[in-house]
Length: 455
Image (cartoon, rainbow, N blue to C red; front, side, top):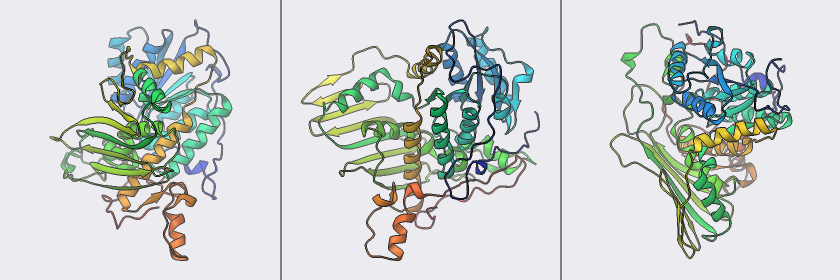
């Protein structure tokens, strides 16, 4: 395996001392790649680069190839070369003539993403662990690439600001940016949310969304760590179990359900959230919870509950119950949405594969010269998920912004607390820059409500 002990793409290089403004790095361009303003002719082969070659990245690559008959995978980047080889093997089985990754287009290490972006690709698929997403998104935007960006888009406030600034730059450059919040492209969900927003169940009174599933990537015993392997490499290999890489289960997985809550609430942010969470499954390593419950309050008093769990042997379900003054909309994973109440309805149409549809939207836009940009809503849903996680970690009631902070009463110290507990004021940064695979790095213990502080 090639030496991956390389420097991370620093996110602080994009932030000035005032804590929020993006400083643009030098623009990187590749003369042979399609520019954002160009319309791709149907006979033009679109060159795709995949960053993050695990299961989700390989799936995204397959869906991209399925979405456009004249596209090829020509470059791959991953921290580990075995991931690249496994991905090529799987994709070549499905698309034997459209996976053409030469040896010099296989990039490994923590800086592999930049090498891929510089290699002349037209479209970049971002599917690495979410802790790296802001850096990868920024680099792809600066280079003028069209982008599929898997969810979530950040794991902390520092990453959110970098990714949000990249979204704004993508708008300026007229880049296509499609988010991996796949339910937004589901045929049946588009129809049921249209009916919801038209008032078919009246005014929304509450939402309860569940995401109960088994563990995604269980943490191996610490004794299984190979001798001599550095902390960072061990954590990257087991990325789901560390909040600086995954964002925890609520940010990495249950964010899908939260994104649907946000969709129902017309993508307006909540006023505040109070939450609980913890860990029932023992583990020698890792610092994430295995269950959360978040109660978000929206303007006007509507309470929306998100609850998720990743524990073996428990009841599993993924269901959204949206209650209104005139009925109820029920959305279940894999089942047809339906409305109970004054105006009964059930989806009876053809359900197309939403993963295919999101990539079709991206490639159709590139071919037609149009622009699709999911940036604002993808960033809002991501930060709202981070907000819920931090409410559970700290045991505090968090506000979205300073002027919506929960009433503390009194003055002085209490007034200061109001500002400190506003999500948009957070300065949280879960990991230092410039980590290398061989470095020692303690990501912190399992958060303890009442002890862990809101940053």
